[in-house]
Amino acid sequence: MKHLKTLVFLPLLLLVFTTCSEEQIDGDRIGTINGKVVAKGTNAPLENVKVSTNPVSSTVFTDEEGNFMIENAVVNTYAVQAELAGYVTAFESVAVLENTVAVVAFELALSNANNQPPSVPVLVFPEDLQTDVPFEVQFTWESSDPDTDDDLSYILELRNGATNNIELYETAQDTFYLASNLDLATTYFWQVKVNDGVNDDVVSQISQFTTIALPNNPYFFVKREEGNSVIYSGNEDGLNGNESEADISVLKLTSAANNSFRPRSNPVINKVAYLRNVGGNTQIFTMDTGGGNKTQITSVIPVNGFRIDEADFCWAQNGSQLYYPNLDKLYRVNADGSGTVLMYQTTDGSFITEVEEAAFDTDLLLIKTNDYSGYNARIFTYRLSLNTEETIVTQGVPGALGGIDITANGQRVVYTRDVSGSENLNYRIFESRMFVFDIPSMVGAQLSTDAALGENDLDVKYAPNEGAVIFTRVGNNIGAIPSVFKLQFDTTIEEKQLFSAGSMPDWK
Image (cartoon, rainbow, N blue to C red):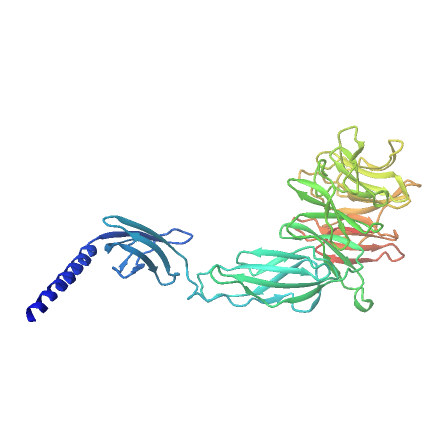
């Protein structure tokens, strides 16, 4: 019986031995895993990245070039893991074959696990529920980020409460944005989103404000801001009937980002025409009296003259057309920009610098011409239907002439003249004074004003009722700051300053 048991046991041992021997032979089949780890987006190599596998083999770290190698990996299919602090752990599947090199690559994305989001933006201006906000407003907010290396970017979302139109304005890292041409008397809603490039957007509360209602401003003038001319409107009626102060109800109509000047208003159609520099030329634009609906009128033939800051133009035909100069030519253009027509050209090559139309006699123009240096100036009326000069207001006097205007019935003309008679290369004016010329009597006279020696009166225009004039007064020294004045025609001939640091006034 014992012998029999021995015989049965030996085959079982042999079977067990044979099976164990086959498993050990398979374990000797090995390969290699090679790889590289880089940062996502930049492909910069990442050093000291921990690389491991499942099933478990060796654990290695990348070198300074981002490379790693796992040797003697048993033939199998592995999930290879790459992990580095501050980055999202990545996994890649790879099959290891006998005596071969399996290649795997990783792109690790930055992790936001340790990156804190920016603070919620605080809206500073306009304040919530604020009223009478100008239609050009600089939105301002505050926000910060605990991670100082993050670059923040902002999106300002602005919704018009009347139309529900939404405008999005992006800034890089600035916590302010200047928006122009908002609608008057309109409620707006705004909020700001901030992003640090890692976390989700952080959004502010919604704030609202209401823009200013359109004031009854009869005056238009220009101020210098940030190296450009900016057009404003204003009034002279203060609170409680106080008319002694200047700069009443001043409203900014154009942006300092553009050079806009020489406003000319037309109350019949409630529009303001003005000049603006565009691509090296000077073009006529129009806008509503509140500053909205800015539209370019001229294009192919721009406004031009011996000095563009001296060039002037005018409304015509009750606001349906405009007259403007281009060197020795005078053009008429429809108020929508169509139908540009040559109306007059000088015969001696002199430049046309200024033009005005008599409102009640639209066939009669008042024109000022001068040579290329601004002198040898002439002021005369011109009858369009006859193509003839009708009345010579002044000519042959030394010095600068300008600032012309004519009454509605075409009977009287106002203009300025440098009584010093100076003519110089810089067209510097030393003692400009205002003059009135009566066409029926052919008599002219200087207006008595409070202008002191060393001051100039320029850019004179009639009041709508022609009982006063509005004009610029400025020192004749370089860099002098001008102001806008009104001179009332009555027994006292009273002067009043209307606007400080202003010039090129208009009053219709």
